[in-house]
Length: 272
Figure 1 (cartoon, rainbow, N blue to C red):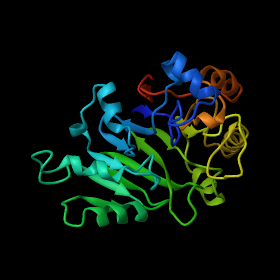
Figure 2 (cartoon, rainbow, N blue to C red):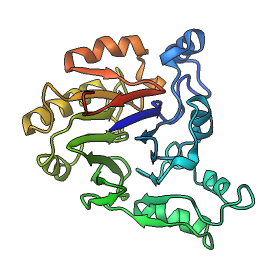
Figure 3 (cartoon, one colour):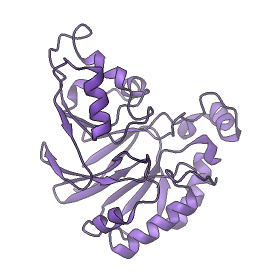
């Protein structure tokens, strides 16, 4: 499998949309891997994860074609992952398509909002639920429950194909016990996980900082879900985390992890 990290920023990206903190100022001056758009990813060129408001710019930047997508899988309903108004541009009058061109998988909250926004539109909409696996185009996809929005079944996503397993987790928070229990049954070749808060501390429990991430990684080692062969890459970094890309490289190295960046392509299995 191959995953492309189209965006690796938090809700307002880096540099922050309306802020000029240290990390944002650094990104504006030096650019490169410190520029982070809102989170989204692409599996093997055709399974799209989330639809952030930066999707149009991301696909243009990387020379991609949205018509190659076979599925769009949403993780949760926050605006930086679920730009519902963008869905309209796939159908008449913006294209000649009479049906949404790929399947959409989403939790009940997101699916309900899509159905409400487009009540008469021919969209193949399938409700996904935590710990209920589904198959798509030869992939086994297992949503696991994130600790992010109270009252919403927010998802992180496990993809399995050809003996390879990866977990894509933005907006995880520290997982509930039922999620850690479920993870006992998996071994991950690749773990992509948020480190939104970086060096900062917050009372909000729906995101991880570096200390929280350390706790999660140690727990996953104890469960046998990851080991030294597992590649660990972070994403969903916010400027409020007070960490530049190079600072994250140094801070994550003792954990056997590395920071992701926009446009990063990671291959799993088959000699990767």
